[in-house]
Image (cartoon, rainbow, N blue to C red; front, side, top):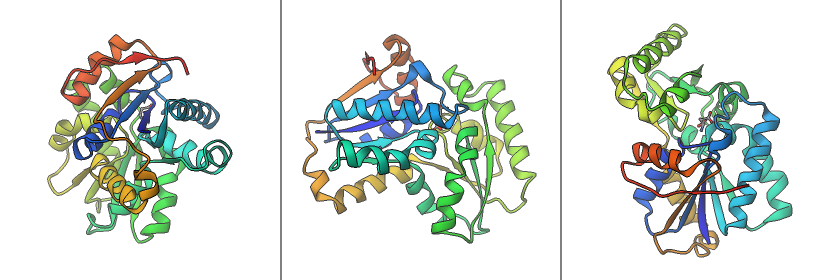
Length: 270
Ligand code: DGL
């Protein structure tokens, strides 16, 4: 049985990369729903339907544990999948998201108790980060900024050009106008780590920039440690299969940018 990693497209490769570097022995299937990406501006119903189909598909491919690497899908579909789909379809299998592991760590970084979050419109509107944070660290003020143009820039391979710099600076101006106390910025979208050099260059050094792979991977390690009944089901041959719902050539070309090495994906119908 394998670990499935799901994203609306390529961005989840940033999470996969981090997990795979720390836990290379397991067998993985990465599924990108490239045919229907981006999810960021879609309705709750559409995201729930697409995410459920993708999760069911990964289960049919022998995934025992699935990580929904996409923030938008984690925000809008994870809870319903955990509560409504899993108990009736695969009660012993597990689906995890990326929001809780990110929020759990925020308190360790902020001195001013004021954290900014950049994400898609869907993630911001869902208020999922805010809701989790209220439970775990209610003293932290969260300033949420939707950055709708960053995903298309990354998908177009525009990581450090004038366009990327322009929009990163614009979103930072809008963010800091809402509080002068921000000392931490969480990049709560799979694609944004690729813009890290531009983001670092555009923000003051006093602002810590957090990427989710740094939280999701240790959290998964800890989860497997605490759940030997799941861990023992997972096979360890060190393999990875990359699947996409769109053309594999396009996936492979950009995957190389995200991962830093070549991959050969397969196109699948969900
Ligand atoms: N994967 C999405 C996220 O992390 C970004 C791309 C999209 O909008 O589909 O929110």
